[in-house]
Image (cartoon, rainbow, N blue to C red; front, side):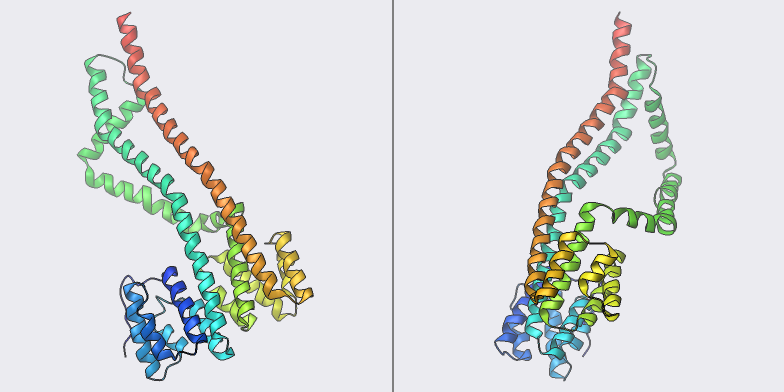
Length: 350
């Protein structure tokens, strides 16, 4: 049996959450895997996921394990998902593992949509500014230039520069495109890739909201691993391999190394200094009080609420700031192009 391989196959957190939650319930009710796969195809999933489930059923019928069957579609099911399913099968805690995966992917999906909504307006505004600038450069500036010439008014240097630039682009479109591609895209990309990438990542990780997000993701996954009852070290390794984010990957690997050396979770977190005092204190209380599962769940929920509150606060600042930027662009255009024109006309009239 060959697996599906489509060009645009991509993990979908909503589908993964829906699958995990329903599989957890069906498995807990004692439904066999083959019947479970038939029932899962009735869910409102993406087409690629429905097709993968039909093929997974065939793999299971041929004698493959559930995690091996999922692994045939590693473009749809991340390594963390497959690894956790594997540990759930081996430990006999598959229902708990799947429930944890549902919770994790549901949270990630929610934050992904929230961030998209937050950034939608500023991005739309930025695109609008670029569009207006192109229109001004190619339509308004030539008209203003001719107007200045006809009235024998001194042409502002910015207007003359833009007029000459637009004329050059119109006269030499191929050279202009190559120049823009080389200096505007390739050179910045090379500089970023080989010189600035690590510096920018380190700088971004110092921003409070990004640190909070990384801490929330880390604690949420750690909570799921602990509450699922799977091997902690293996769970941390699978978590590390599922992230491209080097900062998050490093957190999981450092914690795993510390645990293998015999340190407690709270000792490791405190030593590496990535986490707030509240986080380390709650985990230490859980370790000493024997209620780690409940403490981790409470901590994850607390960090989620705090992160949402901070995102909403930044959103409240971001939209007015975007409007101010748009207003500043309009004022700059008026001051550079329109005010000199009216000043010259008034001087001429006097």
